[in-house]
Each structure stands twice: as structure tokens, then as C-alpha cells.
Picture 1 (spheres, helix red, strand yellow):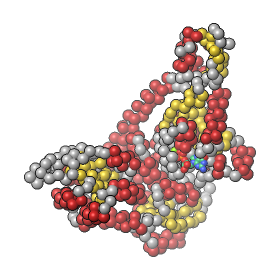
Picture 2: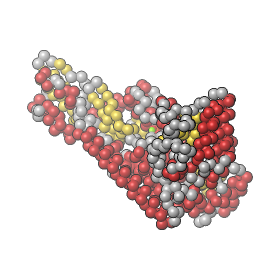
Picture 3: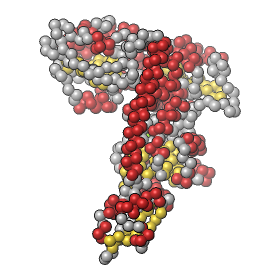
Picture 4: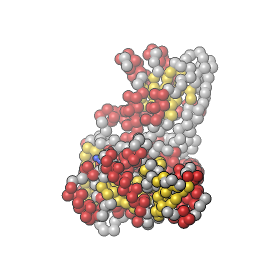
Length: 593
Ligand SMILES: Nc1nc2c(ncn2[C@@H]2O[C@H](COP(=O)(O)OP(=O)(O)OP(=O)(O)O)[C@@H](O)[C@H]2O)c(=O)[nH]1
Ligand SMILES: [Mg+2]
């Protein structure tokens, strides 16, 4: 990219930051001028209420930076603007990829052509606060974009400017957070607390860099300051001396405590629930996941806090609210109702799909386990292709994916990758989480993966998994298999201890193909042993039905072709017997070998 181009776009950005651009026409004129000078397409990002964040000729470079900032700030709704001399800038492959890679909500396009029709498309941003739509406008005698609907995008611009300027600086200096690690020891205290390892892994998932830790061990929380007064003062002192982007707490604290500290120290305060919610928000990809997280956020924050936030951000006007408590409350309830209805619809559709699949359901197995244990890695290995995303972060997967897996030449099973568990998940997320697990709830077998290198002991992972499974009403422990993944990270002594003390069924490494093959054989054997096995005799006239049989049986061996008939070994569960007999048009007992 030539220096000239970069400089010109940089000037445009400075212009945005320096000017009051509530006058949209001025802004568009500046964009047109910049564009004329550089003769290249340009891009900029806007936050959901219209704040221009960054401009430049290279969208990838600043998307990288901005999306990172978005996570740090807890915002996740971004639109990318394309300024182009094309009359109707089309979505190129590169831009489509940007939308996907950076999870941008939309691409907004603006043509800089003068004298002809100008076009601005607004695609919907589904954040429930700013509702936009796709609109085409014409320029008529300097009447360009006078439409009030569209100027909403730029509303309140000047009040947000400092905020973003500050973000910009924070990003350049690399943000850093302060961790407050509290441990309460009183028996029977029902408080979700993360170990330091766990909270560090959660922070890393959000790209939050912990540069300082303040810790305290106490019997129970102290009213008001939550920690001891001395420790609280130490925290305030630390916040005074350093410019942190976040204070992170390893447990959940009352909202009033957070607000007080935020106001006092001008820093974002996130407790364990906030951190987990932000991760879910960051990773939610499907409509269902996005809606569930939004609902959890609305429930979790509580009415008062959301209203407070709305007021602070002054988004009331944009959402069409008059800013009063009543209308905010009305808006919140409406939004909750809306989300619930949409979720119910999605669940109904999924249920229908599941039922159809169950009609002809081969044996099924779900990969479940604590977050980051390697479920998705194993899933991809089993299928020999990159089906689901894998990353060394918490809660990468938020939705269940089910695929058919060939386990031998004549048999298939259904295999599901699922959302990861975490100890003491915030209760509002738990609800969302268990709905997502509905798919695995119906699987015949559960392969419970455990990670000996994770932030939580294997013993604790097992307890957590058992609790969660009981909550979705799965008590059939005979169908659960415990498998330790990441064997490569385990020393022999620890392996022996786990084998002796916990009765682990199998050790493997999802990264080693031989090891995955061993696990596959283990699954085939287990599925086989839970089923009825029979040898039957089929005439050559029924040869074509063998393929159909695979939908609800397993054929562990190749059929044997005799002179007058074929013998087949069948494995099936009793509930599928009538389907087999229907398919063959014969009673199994009549054709046994
Ligand atoms: N050393 C080692 N690392 C592994 C192994 N299996 C998976 N991993 C790594 O563990 C990390 C998490 O893997 P994922 O497959 O995303 O884990 P997951 O259980 O699907 O995680 P969530 O979707 O977040 O619940 C990735 O960095 C993997 O590369 C293994 O056998 N050995
Ligand atoms: Mg996963």
C-alpha cells in the first residue's frame, strides 16, 4: 500500500475524530474528497450506534485491531463500511471473508460518485437496540441522505468521541488487566470461584492480558467491600497508580460493588459471570447461540443495571425510548419475550429435524467434557476433515454438531461435538447451555473426555460432568465412557495413578491418528457390546436391502456370500428390531443361521 494512500485515509480518520460530524453531509463530502485523491476503495468500521472507529485502505489490518478492541471493550456489534467509486459496490469474495472472519454484523456501502444516483445499503444489525434496514437513497440537488432514518447511524457521535480516542490509545499501549483472586474458605459457602489457572485461561480467551494479581484468602466475603478493607484499599491504590483496562474478579460479586468500583476507579470491573458471558458473546455464531447469550445477558444484569447502562450510553433515543424507567422496562420485557419466541421457534425446528433423523437412527455417541479438553479436535480427527473450529481457548464450541461417521465398511454411527462444561456455570447461562445439550441427551452413548493438563483436576472434571448429566436427566452410567485425552502431556506416574484410582476406560491423544484409531475401535466394541448380536441368512433377492439395514443396525463383519444365500452378522438395539423386520419383510427368528 503506498504511503500516499495510507496518509490520505489517515487524514480522513483524523478528520472524523477531530470534527463534529453530526452533519452527515459534511462527512460524506470528506469521504468523497478523500476517495477522489486516492482513487482506491476505502473502508471504515462503525460501532453499533454509529461511531466511526477507524479508517484505512486496508480492511484486514484494521479489522484485526478493531475486533480485538471490540472484545476488550465488550462490544461485539460492528459494521464495515466500504467507500467505493463503483456505483453499486458489490460484495467481493474478500469482503465476504472479512464479514465471516471478523464476525462483522454487516457491510454498509457508499458510492462516492457525484451527479448520479448514490447508494447506501444498511443491512440489519440484530442487537435489539439499533434497528436498521437495507435502504437505497438518491442524491437530488444536495438532498443526499437527508433521510432521518439513516442519520440515526450517526446520532450521539460527539458524546462518544473521547471514549473511542481512549480506546485507541489503550490498544496502542497494549491493554492490561488487574486480577483480584479471592478464595473464601467457609464451609457450605455457595460461591462460584475460579482457580487462578482457570481465570487466566478465561482471560486469555478474551485476549485480556493479566499484568498484576492481588489475592486474598478469607473465610467469607465482607459486606460492602467484598474483600477485607485493607485489601480493598490496596486495590484502590493499585488502580490509582496504573491505567488498567479491566479489573477481573475470579468469583461473582454483587452488581452494586462493581458499579461502585467502576465509578471510583474509572475502570471496567468484570466478575466471573461477566467474563464467561463475554466469551459466549464472542464465540456465538449461530442464531440460537446469539439469542441465548443475549437472553442470559438480559437476565443476568437485571433490570436496574441495564437501564443504568442504557442511560449512560444514551442509547435510549436510538432505540426509540424516551429514556424513562417505564419505557426502558417495557423495552427490556419486550425484547426478552421476542428472544424467547424466536428460541422456541428454533427449538421446534430442531426437534422436527431430530425426530426425522431418529426415524432411521443408527447408534449415536456424543463427545462431551469440560471446555478445552479436545472434543472438537477429536471430532475432526474422527471425520478426517475440519468440520468444527478448534482453538486453545475456553468455550470455542457453543452449538452441537452431528455428523455420520463410518466405523466400518458396513456400519455408520452418529457422532456429536458439543458445547464444553465449566464448573459452576452462571445459572442464567446454564439454561441456555442445557438446551444446546438436548442433542447429546438423546445419544445412546456418551464419551466423556477429560484433560489431565487443564486448569481443573481430573477428579473435579468428573464430578462436574456427573452433576451436569444428572441435570439433563441422564443417569444411565452404563452408557458413559471416561476417556483421558492429551495422553502426550501425561507422565507415566500420573497415568498410573489415574488408571488405578479413577477407573478410566481409555487413554488417548486426539492429535495422534493411531491413538484415535484405537479409540474408534474401543467405541465400536462398546457400541457392539451394548447391542444384540445375531447371524442371519438372506437370499440374493434381498441383497439390495443390506444397504438400507445400515440405517438402524451395525454390521461388524463383511457379509459372507455362499452359493445360495448370504450370511450377515447384525448388531442392533432392541428398539430397532421392528424396523429391521419391516425392512426385510421377515421375522428375524425365521432366518437365523
Ligand atoms: N497436546 C495436546 N493438545 C490437544 C490434544 N487434543 C486437543 N488438544 C488441544 O486442546 C485445545 C482445545 O481443543 P478443542 O478441540 O478446541 O477443545 P474443545 O473441547 O472442543 O473446547 P471447547 O469447544 O472450547 O469446549 C486445542 O489447542 C487443541 O489443539 C492432544 O491430544 N494433545
Ligand atoms: Mg469445541
